[in-house]
Image 1 (cartoon, helix red, strand yellow):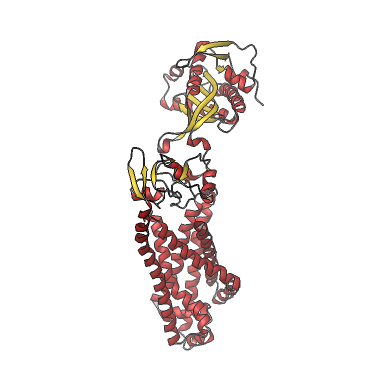
Image 2 (cartoon, one colour):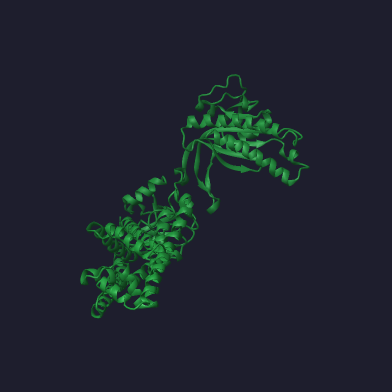
Length: 555
């Protein structure tokens, strides 16, 4: 909840900064237009409601930033996170003088805090004041853009909008700073004429020297308070750690890597960072991306508290099974646990998008298709490597489009063979019908391909297709970037054997009776065989179809 509140308070402050910079940009036109634009700006932000929203967001954002640092058990941050924190801390000394010199000066001494007063005081203050004033919007803007990037880069729409957002991130501050610089130049030029600057300060009711001194003292005091809060936060961290050690120890086993013991109160992600164990966390441990998710096991896993609503929402989005949790949100009580990170430490934003529930592993009834080109070795003999690659890519594209059009999922290409899965998100009956439809489409696609390549092939391409359905273990398997959702088990092996049987029966398709029965399809007079499958007990009833393209289209 605190993270979401901090984000929304940041949105309010960002909108304020955008409107302020757009107001500055009017200085590109003239000083008069710049000050007229400020009238609209004041109506939005300087009414009672606007003041409550603005200053409420400011204090909330600052307090929650300190709270976030306090709650972190390990200050091992990425370069971008360090940059955001340092820039955020720099806003206080850079912005305090400006806020006190405008808003407090108006409230205490009746100073009119418009552009004439601000620009005139910069002319008098010299290059130090100018550098500080112009650095402030840049620091605030970069800090805000980093925060928005972390908050939005996991959204599906972010990549499509990124060019426009990038353009805005460049144009808004450039226009605002350029407008303010031109206005400052105009005021500096006018100040060269005797009496102009004095008249300007008299019109805005500029503070006296003593009042200016008081304003600076107030500014320094507020900066000291902010610094004291920051120091107090860092000083409280070791005291908190000493207190929490009294609660007991959490021992985490990371498989073959190592075992780690830390005081209770840390999240699993923080324990990984303290121990130097690489752990994915695209959002920086804010509970948004899900890339830090782990499977929790071990003797005490039932002690782990239930997921809070925000974590439960993310887990539901990725279809996480029981005992899969977000490492950045779980603070296990004292006990012994085994944790298995489910994504590689190098996982990026793409892995944070919605993933299929099957990725976590489980048994599921699916249909499997295996296909292979007959006699491809002899066909490829005498051809240049370029021609072989071209031919295979045309074949893979034709078969891949046929499988996907039927509703299947291409699992892998094996040499000149293809494996496809059906039913990952469908009922067994629909999966079996999709597999038969894919075989029919593949046969027709091969016929079209042979016609298109008739001038380049000495003999037409022929394929053998094996179809079988049954329970299989489905999950995301592999290592790091090579991991993908696939299936293993007896059903997969049997489908592969049926593809091999197409050579023995000299047909294009061999399909198990199990799949046909599930699909509710009667092939009538198609030859039936009871075959032995290596590694499988008993005989399996199959049907042999001379040409898969002769099947009736599945509606």
